[in-house]
Length: 420
Image 1 (cartoon, rainbow, N blue to C red):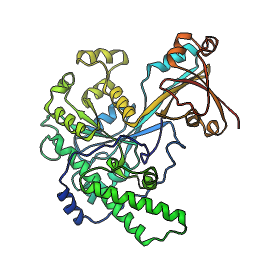
Image 2: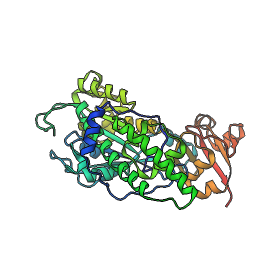
Image 3: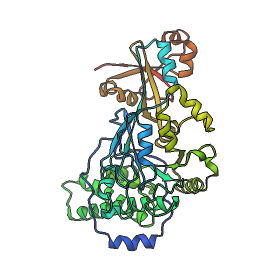
């Protein structure tokens, strides 16, 4: 899948749950600028993509974050325990993206193996109020979260007297505000530091000066939005301004999916859960994604044989596990698409951004494919299945020869011709 750790995706603007701007402005005056971790520079998303998307699972302590991580990641090693900060270093697990089309194509092509796309889940240490000042494991949390493409914020929507809530009571809106506020403060601190550096610096040439002016303009716009409780991604920027601030990896530029974690008994009727209603309302205001899961159910599924898992889900009144929903929502939020290559050696799923051209899609496989691109022999998934093979699709006139301007469609089966 696609990797863009600084979240260089151009997505639909998202708004934070409204926060009182005066409070933010007053609190900001009390904050000392911090620099969180070593900044990393990443290549443009469209020019350099790997096969792994990285989603950071975050949340306050004891919301079910590590339990969910352990459940969805095969052989997950995070230490799930009833204790804040038990996940001190980020735990990374790679999960295959469920896609029934992959095996169908593999069978038709008589492939030796089928290779699914993958998604990396990163279990990041829980944070508390004051994380941007270093409370709890705040500094570690904030540096690790910079390196993910999207944020999956787990929100506790269940009561359990045996699992103590870090703030003393279950309150989804408050939990969401705590995390969002800390991300705002972290970005404000970094922006203030960067603006100060830009003021002192002197551009060496006219091109550098133009770039610095674009960065300064973008940061001032973003800073104003942050002070009003809105994220960086809600700010309208020119392409040049957006490109100028990419290297900062601002936390509030990242897309967010809220993961409402409910009890097993509430899973089939989650919409009736009052806590879930609160999260749904906030997610709607934020124009963010929302998925309802039961981390406990996901954990129980891992202990069952594969053939018994669907039967167990059916007994709970649900048709699939939360993993499929979580990945589907992530794909949708990030604007990702899947295309396939299929032959006797292997059938493989590849993930790209919606709107990518054939050469760019080829570059996901190897940069040489993009550089030496000649054409892409392409057939739609349904046409491939109806024909029964690539050769049959060619004979029936279903296989098209597409050039450099072709926009790859969801489910395309492609064979690239290139010369280097």
